[in-house]
Amino acid sequence: MQRFPPSANSASLTILNLTSPPPSEISSFANQAWHGERELFDSHVTDWNYLGCVQGKCRVHTLEEYEALDSITQADFYQRFRYDPTSGHFDPDIVPVYCICEVPHNPDRDMVLCEHCKDWFHCDCVSFYPERNEESFCPQVDCQEAKTARAKKARAGAKLAKR
Image (cartoon, rainbow, N blue to C red; front, top):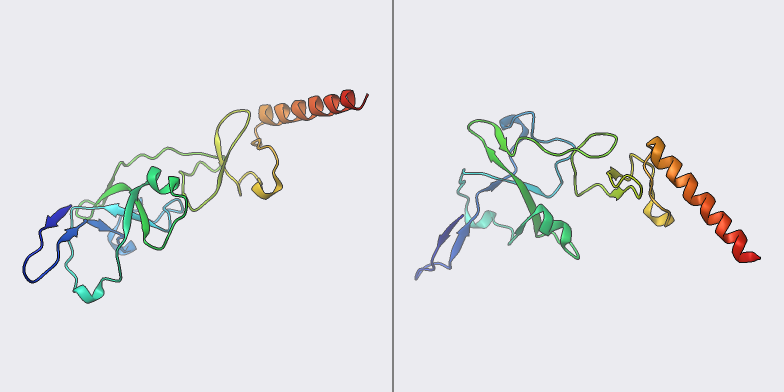
């Protein structure tokens, strides 16, 4: 990040070196399905543009800060990787994977925590629909057995309550 103090002819200016590189310039690591729609990449490259090209102010958050926002506006973006266009490498180059699909987290896709194994899954991968207000269990056998046992226990408790 570079900061320029105000002068007689201009306001103060802060330059963030962020990029959303075009696919022709980047490695196969980039533009993955798990890259978010509002994700930018930290970079050491500075591009100079005419002031007329600036459409407005934006806020760049860490992924954690972005996910903690109460509401996301058009000005909110996040970054979690640094991109070096000369080498085509990202840092970090290893990303944790989740779900049965083994794809890293993308904040544009809803995820749910299995109540038994405590692993994270994409809602669409495990057919979980938050609007149904149901408990979340992943498709792993032991988790499904725990779900069945919990349902049986709830039914038994309901029968006792009726007596």
